[in-house]
Length: 306
Image (spheres, rainbow, N blue to C red):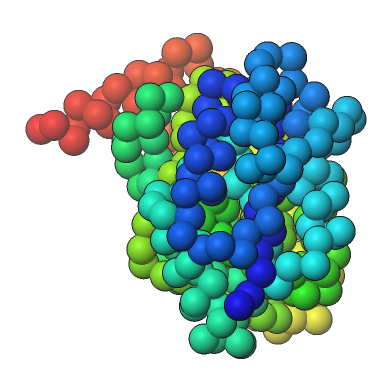
């Protein structure tokens, strides 16, 4: 029986933490080593953790970022499989871990397996679905996309060790950067079953740090181009790839309210390849005009209704 270690890093999310913990404890798979690493939080997180008694293992550490907290447990565990689920996300049902372990046990050539993931609101109601799809390294690099939803992902420990775990210099895109490092040389498999939920709320990292995501996306792809400079595929498609990542960064900056940075990214994208969509050109020019981007969004919604 394969063993698994799951880590939940948490900081000031006592409101959602019990649902996350329960989703792990309710798994049918028995050989689970579960850890929670606390921020340290200033809310009632420690009270929540203490209420579970010996059902969970937890520690409080100051000055640990998300990647540090996860790596801290991953590096000292001896489990065959590792995973992490944030303190506002949950496993969708009780057989998620069992299904993932069974797949990895039957497919020794697979380094990482992941399932589908749905978005939920603060109350846990489903609001949409993450755009999961099969992982193909060249396609992911070319399109600057991330088809892997982190909460529904399970990783072989020996693979994580080989690639030196998560890069703690990334705050938002630590998972995306890791998938790309591993996926370049290893098989990553997609299971079309919903395995987890991804909660979106006002305090979530997903909505509050989009400007950091923009910076990190550019850094990830710039590093890929440097490290894989001998790749014929990347060399042939460099301009398209870098155009796409700068367009992605521009859109993230727009959503975060940083219009000046957005325009700079659009200009960089055009320098690499001017063949960006008409809509992106419109958004670029609209960032110069106060309120203009909001008007464009309203017009797009109106046109969809017609």
